[in-house]
Amino acid sequence: MAEMPPLSRRERQVMDIVHELGGATALQIRERMSDPPTDSAVRSVLRILVRKGHLSKEYDGPRYVYSPRMPARAARRSAMRHVLKTFFGGSVEGAVATLIALEDGALDADERERIMAMIEEASEEGR
Image (cartoon, rainbow, N blue to C red; front, side, top):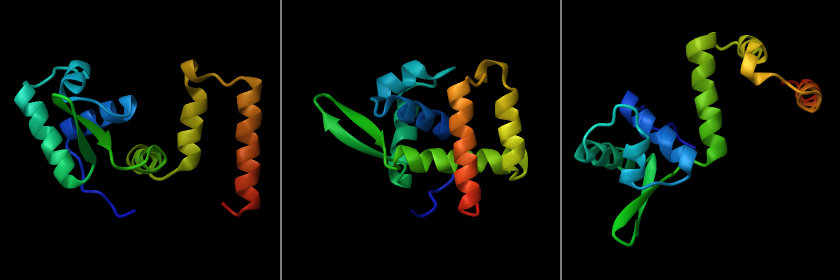
């Protein structure tokens, strides 16, 4: 999939909400925003995101429902690439170390085993 145009802080906030909900109306988005702008400002951001190709909209009764155009898996990969580049200088090791060190992200035995299997599989594939 081609690289999408970059997002402003507010556009990213809207996209995060839409991805979390899977699809949302302007009102639902505004209700979930911290320090929400006016209703017309939210609708303006939504129009921009549709124009940039990040969102699609479908008429549902008296309102539009906005949905992400990028599949969730592709969006996760794109977001992770951004986090790796921005906060870890591209270091997967640094990101994994940070995730493991999170107190609220404690791994149970099953999770640890699955992660170790993924690492082994990636190693066998040369990744």
